[in-house]
Amino acid sequence: MDTTQTTAHAPRAVRALAHFFRLEAAGGIVLIAAAAIAMLCANSPLADGYEAFRQLPVAFRFGTFELAKPLLLWINDGLMAIFFLLVALEIKREATSGQLASRDQLVLPLVCAIAGVAVPALLFTALNHDNAGAMRGWAVPTATDIAFALGVLALLGPRVPVGMKLLLSTIAVVDDLIAIVIIALFYSHGMSFVALAWAAVALLGMFMLNRRGVKSLTPYLLLGVVLWVCVLKSGVHATLAGVATGLMIPHVDKRDGVDDEIEHSPLETLEHALHPWVAYAILPLFAFVNAGLALGGISLADMSSALPMGILLGLVLGKPVGIVGAALLMRATGLARLPDGMDVRSTIGLGLLCGIGFTMSLFIASLAYSDPLFYEEAVLGVLLASVVSAVLGYLWLRPALAKRTA
Image (cartoon, rainbow, N blue to C red; front, top):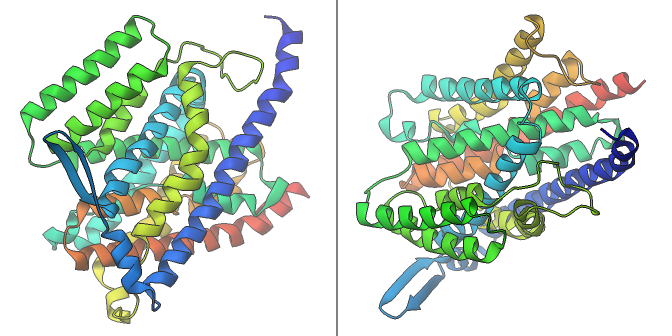
């Protein structure tokens, strides 16, 4: 290996990594602002207009074919498919040339992520096991919102070690992968095997393009749209079409192509193009239409009922217990070590920040609950837990990281 070349490339890679974290952090701040505006609209004289916007009918017609949905569902089923496409691109890149490609780098975030999913689900189940309707949302408190969490870390400035950001990001990526599997297994219904067959044909077409080394993104994206329509009609949640499409996009360059001077793979090209749209448009719009909870009819008894408390405890307590417990166990047994610059105190702070569920938690709640009462309680639990986790994580890490720097 040419060490001179490697050294020359290192600063550009560091700059690109810093740019990624700045993008995610800024996106998290926009996400928080969108949720706050939604809450203001839902609890002000603008409430009727806000609800009318959410339910605005939007139809697409092509000959005899028609898709008609309210704007809320176009965002949740359509735009969020683009978000999941980006998630799949990130997972594939990390698995081939990033943090998930090395066993040594993968073990710690993988075990932490699994524990961080299992413990919140168990806590939620302990509180809601006797309510079959509420139990449909057992997966709501299992995800981490990377944009929101990195937004909080950004408030702590340069004192945050890069290894901590990488560990948080990798745990969140594995969380997303687990959430995708959960959605596919538990939140699909009314299967249409004809539509699934056509979806398989579209997926096979993308697979053949990949095998033949086709690098143009256009045919993949056109087949991805066909796949999305077929999956939408099949009973499987339409966002999984975004996942399948992302996994079919070629990633031929095994280097982590973050340098401006090297040719990007088709996967990296699409990932870089989608990132700002997802961070600054799709996720804030999703937050705006899903986080607007009217607080007028909510009492203290509603806030302390089993469903929102299960989500609150799952995220605020279950996430850090699972993640920190797994990390310390892995360190004690010698199976993994904490990243450079991290100690037990900063690991606890990272676990607290992983309790910020927000985007994926709200999304799973929208799939789990058709009953408006259950859904409103779930949104309440997610919002409370995300705010509490963000505040606790920030207050814990501020002195912990200051001491480490000193």
